[in-house]
Figure 1 (tube, chains in turn orange, yellow):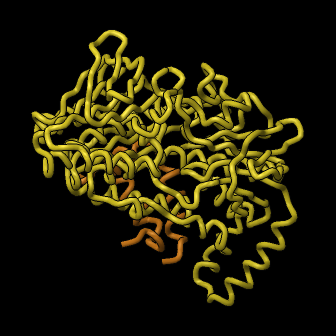
Figure 2 (figure 1 turned 90 degrees about the horizontal axis):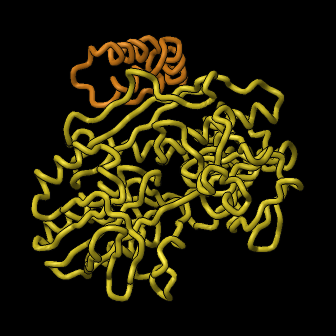
Figure 3 (figure 1 turned 120 degrees about the vertical axis):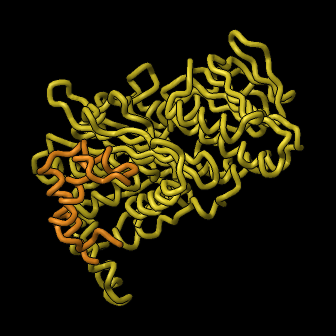
Length: 53
Length: 423
C-alpha cells in the first residue's frame, strides 16, 4: 500500500475521518490530523495523488 | 520534481546524460553552502536542489563517510540492530541531486566576506550559508573529563557513530551483576526521551543475557522529561529490579579511572560502565561564529526562514537552534527545519515570496523493548503575532500504551525519513 497515486478524495476523506475521531484503531494519525486545516489536508492529499506509483 | 522522477526511472544512460546536464548547469546560479549532513543539513541540501529545479548550486560540507542515524541507535545498545542497520550512504545526494559533497570539516566562517574556511585549506564562497552542526558537549563543566583518556573511557554515545558501537562493546564486556550508570543533563538536550529509551534497551539486554545486572538512571531533572508515565510503566512492568530511576541528580564531576560519578547534593556513585550524557550546546562551528546567542548555547533564528538573528545570509537548523515552545530537539523536527529552510532559501534567492504560514509536525517513537514502542507527536504552526512556532491546540499526543504495531511503524518511519533525507 502506497499513498502515491491514491485519489485525492480518498486520502482527504481518510484524513478527515482521523481528524474527526472516526478511526478507532488509530495510533498516531488522529493526533496529527487535528493539527491541519481542511485546506492543508486537501493540499497534502493532492500532493500524494499526483505522485507516480 | 519532474526531473527527479525522470532520474529515478531513467535508464543508466539517460541518468548519466541528465547528470552531465545537472553538473554543468550547477556551475552557474546562486551558491548555497551547507555545513553538516545530518537530518537537517542533508534534507536542506536535497530540497534546495529539487525546489530550485536544480538551478541553485549546493555544496555540502561533511567529513563523515556516511550518515549514521541517532534515532534507532539505542537499539544497537540493546542488541536488536547493528551499525549497518542505522547507516546510509550519501551517494544519492550527489548522483541523483547534483549536490557537491566536500568531505572536509568547516573550521571558521567569515560572515562579512561570506566564506567558509575548511580544515583542508580551501575556502567556499556562498550567497547563503546553512549551518547544521548538531550539538557539541560542554565537558568543561566536568573537570575530570579533561583528564587524559577520560573521554575514551566514559562515553556519551549521544551522536550516532563510533561511540554507539564502543558503548555496546562496554556492555558486552561487563560481567553479569555489574552496574550501568547513565547521567542525564538538565533539559534542553538532544532527543528528550532518548535517555529513557536507552535505559529500556540496556535493561532489555541485561534481562536476556546478564539478569543480575542493574541500570541506574541519574537524572539532573526533577522528573522524566518526556513520555514519563509510559516509561515508568515499562520500567515497573518489564524491568522491575533492573532499572532504578533517581531524579534530581546534578552531575558535577567524573572520575573515569575509578568509574565514579560525583553529584552536587548526592553521594558519589561507582559503576562498572559509566555513560555520561554531558550538557550540550550548538555545535562548535556555530558557537565559534557567535551564532549561539541564547545563553551562549543555542542559536536564535527567524522561524519563517531559519535565518540567524546574529548573522545575515546565515541560516541555522536542527538541534543547534533555540527552540520554539514545546519544540523537541529531534531528528524528525530537524528534517522539517530542513524543508522549511530550503523553501525559504529558494524563495529568497529567486525573488519569490517566503511562505508566511509554515506548519509541520514531530513524531518520536521510543522502543521500550526490542519490539514494543511508545510515541509522542505534535503539530507546530507559525504564529505571526508571537513570531514563533506554537503547537496547534488539540493536536498531538502520546501512545495509549506500549505496543508492537507501533514498533513496526517506528521502523517504517526510519526507512521513510532516511529516504526523504538522503535518497
